[in-house]
Structures are given as structure tokens and as C-alpha cells.
Image (cartoon, rainbow, N blue to C red):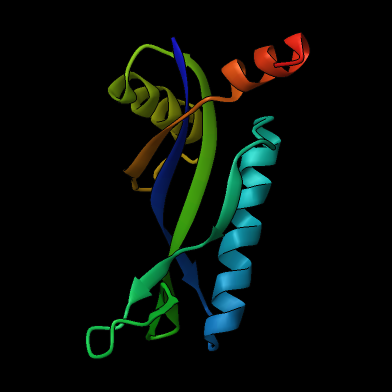
Length: 126
């Protein structure tokens, strides 16, 4: 069994906004509030980045049209004792999806971490 860091992208709608910064603030705040209500404080929430099609430089994933914003959020969660990357992905989507009902989620990266092995080695003094 291994530990994994799972990164997911969420599409968050924010209505009645005029400014990108306000839309981002509302999206991050609402997502955090819904996760906290379901005791999921351990899920990291931040605005996602999208590469510029012209220059390739990343910018905040947010777009406003007709007073409605679509904000791309990045959600990260540590999954412990999963059998495979796919298993870790399913666990992460289940944990976060249960708190963020009706929010589209997509796993974008799964990274195996060695936190368990490192803590055992440090206890032995090696």
C-alpha cells in the first residue's frame, strides 16, 4: 500500500460578478466552506492556472461573461494506503465529490509519496 498526492481540477460557477479577482475569491471561499462543512479541511483549494495560447505563460483560470464566471480550481488531497494510482484517484474523487456535489471534477495528476517510509527511517535514526 502506498501514499499518493492527488490533484484535481474543479469547474466552479460564480454568478453576479464583475471582476476576475472577486470571482476567484468567491469560488475559493465557497469551495473551502463546503469542504469544511463536511469535515474535509485537509483538502487544499487554490485557483488553477491555464497557459496562455500565445506566449505559454500561466494565468489564473477564470473567465467572465454576462456577469457569470467560470473559475478553474485546483484541489489537492493526500490519499494514504491506496493500492494503485487509479485506486487513489477513486478515493480522492469520492472524498471531494461527496462534499462538492454537482461540481465537475477531473483528476489531473497523481504522485506517489514516500512519507510513510521516510518517517520510519527517521525513527530508526538512519
